[in-house]
Length: 405
Length: 142
Ligand SMILES: Cc1ncc(COP(=O)(O)O)c(C=O)c1O
Image (cartoon, rainbow over all chains, first blue to last red; front, side):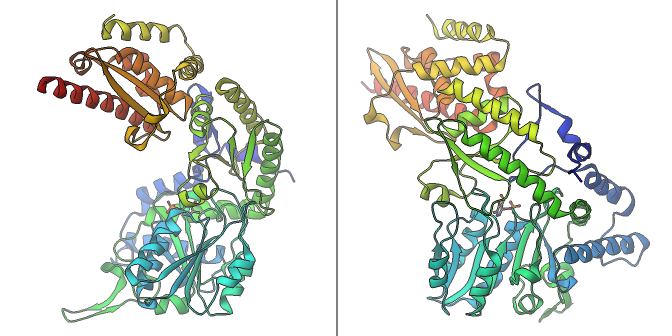
């Protein structure tokens, strides 16, 4: 069956808006995705009929909100195939999830230890570790990226050693689109008992995420990059590890018993959820993931691969274009440059023609600079993009290049 | 011509085009035509912060008037700087400091630009005013 893209587009109200008098072509899904009506309605429904604080009152609404909230946790745990529901911690998003682990990891790092990351990390999976290493006089070691945008695996293997206390890397690069060999690298790390954190920000909406199959200790993602609301996300952690880590924020539901002398922390998952959670947006995240589940992530991936192939081959026909990131395993992200043209100029003209793309260093400054670039143009597709949008983009791009050269 | 007259001329030029793509095409031509800055001034000292593209601005005094030269690695940005320079170059510090920048609104530039570009434009204007103030102080001290 063909992917029902035209029908799906009707679910996304923003797609029928105009930009500078032109129909919106939204190719900045790597930054954030648009929201389907179902998600927007879920937020409204919550505030209109269920709003109440969770886990607290003995009254009807509070029970209702609590049941919905824990139901969302349950569904999300199933969606990523966590072994236990309490392994799903709600956070503000990927950045917050990574910071949680990095902060809690303080007691597991000694002077001279190593933290291993890769050269393709988003600042969110780099700076928290850099700060941790700075505070603990540990070393931040970086696995290099090869010219085609893949990790240097032989070097990665050599960098693993008992000195490494955690390995943190991205499932999919937000700049290059590379799908990293997570399972393989996790297995290599486990030979030295090194726990692994995966930044899943760019993966959750595009590929199947099965945390038991990946076997990583931690997995972080944001709802807003998977058609859900902003301001919420997940930290998955193996319960063995989450039980070991100390909480780093205190107050509210994360407490079991408290006196002025001491506090006993609540059990998982509440131990890491200080304060009133973002209930409405968690429910919106559940709705978004159910939406993906109904469509089938494999169907989505297959459809987006078609967009990627079409866009890549059309781009390569334009003289002067260089695609940055040619890994064999890629998601629907294309970074490119055009010889003699500043990405920002192209972005401005494409915007005039209604096309939203991202320009700059994509919060991965060390990567972009190591490629000898001062920025790229990035198009990143979502499930509602179409081949005819790609064609319109290619025509618009040619027009812009003609104006600028 | 006074700054005001030059600004008015620019506004009129812009209103010849109804379509923003044409206005951009015009800015791009201006950018391409901007005389290159002396490479000795393309240093970090002359770099204006707050732009996604890099902009270098240099100012010199010639017989009581300030002459600006500039460059950018992005050509639309260069076109915008070129407009500013055309209007503000060859005027005294006092004239520049008293200049009314509302012509930018008449062009529609500020509201049309992305926030990063609008910030960049604001930074350019601020830098131009800083140069004017510095030259004014210097001449007052003489
Ligand atoms: C690979 C990667 N990691 C982390 C993040 C940060 O996500 P958030 O801003 O939702 O915390 C992003 C988002 O741009 C990303 O692409």
